[in-house]
Length: 166
Length: 166
DNA sequence: GATGTTACGTTATAATATAACAATATAGCA
DNA sequence: TGCTATATTGTTATATTATAACGTAACATC
Image (cartoon, rainbow over the protein chains, first blue to last red):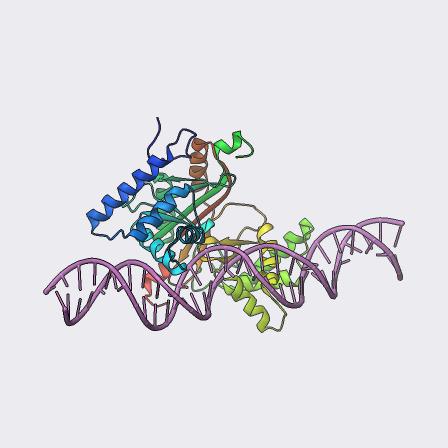
């Protein structure tokens, strides 16, 4: 099966990335329409670039890609769009990389975990309820009210273990 | 009981912080002696400052504290000491804060989880084997080799929930 | 179309971190 | 002890990530 979206695993060789990007944007457009959010041309383009990069991408990389296509852009331009996309659950920020990646489940307001390959740079997004429940249990024991969870695991993905030089 | 080290919870009112700092430094000295590591005056002082701050502290805060006591210091000065302390498990880096905190179990090379209070700035270090095992299970399913784990939970600690203005 | 709000442009700067090379201190050995 | 290799620290410059502050343009609502 050739999944049309970035699934909860590292993309395989037969992964059709163009379809995956298109699907994600369609989903974002629908979501914003439903929610009365303004997915402006700039925000749309930034989201598209994030998906097109196909792996966590830095704000200044995105900025360069925008300016290369002729758009006038300074850091605030990109950070504002990133803020909008983050606030509305269309992308995630990967803290340990200072990078941004498209969200697989836009609008669900879920807590995600990321497995990040240090060889190829790809990141797999999981949503393991078990991790959430263990964290919740610890928080309860501490009397701690959870606001935000950051779970990021760095290492080597299965593909990169097979071929040493990706 | 008045614990003499920062325990696996948020410090209580009767927490004797001076003893806690002294204890941590003694432990670090012993550990470095055993391992043949050079805990130089600078590194010792940086570690002391980290413990004395009693909560995650930024590199440039430490730098300022060093210069205020008359020592010549530039960013590389502090980052090198931080690198040494990180490599040898004497401190942790809290990615989501870009800050550093003393390790409760120096030398154990353990994976820690942090619960960070957004009100008082304190961080509790846990070492919950259950979280590790769940992550390990997910990694196995993905065929992913884990190198480094980052688990950071932000929220409000029990003390701060009781008194609104800490 | 007047008006309030949201989004974007622009300039400057803050905050965090590293590169590159020189000077000094320390350890280990002749 | 003195020599030499290595580790540590000093110093200058710069890279990288992010935000403040303020003006302008677009849009939405009346």
